[in-house]
Image (cartoon, rainbow, N blue to C red; front, side):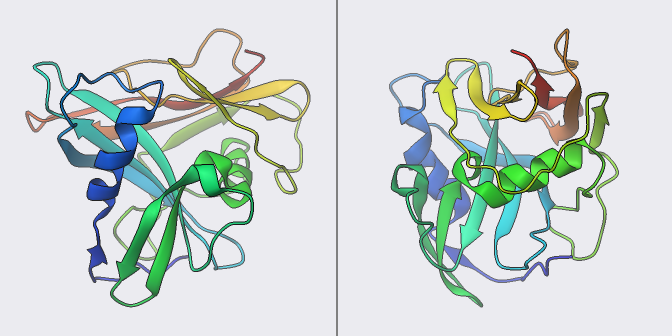
Length: 214
């Protein structure tokens, strides 16, 4: 499993996301900049050990009704060719040096490992602890098995989130705006669900991604 380094990242992930978020079509905030606080998430391991893969939940508390967002992120030691429009920003890691931070929906490593997770062939791991599975992340799959590698992500963003074509005529939808207690959509053949913290200190949960025909 990936090693979690206890070090600094400059600028921080939340600082990068604060600047990046308002231009997204699924952003629910107003004219003011979002005020983000980390609320949860999990990681997946890159089998090659080169790319950091994280699913971060961050809550915008700038409005009376806070909004929890899901940010799939990848961290690379060099630019990902052809993914310029997916770049969230660059940051200096205290151990690893310069890191290129991407919207992971455009990164084949993240998409491949996410589809492997849905099918039960990959393990969600703790966001901030080395060598620790995250058992609060749940998944299901009832479709026809398929290889999760070799895919070229072509994500499309809209007000509902991010949609990517997957094998066998299915689509992977990333629920960027999280809904408490939400279950898989009707007709889904797979899903991933998780938990996060609310600003009042309670724990809640809902679906992060669904795999289906819509």
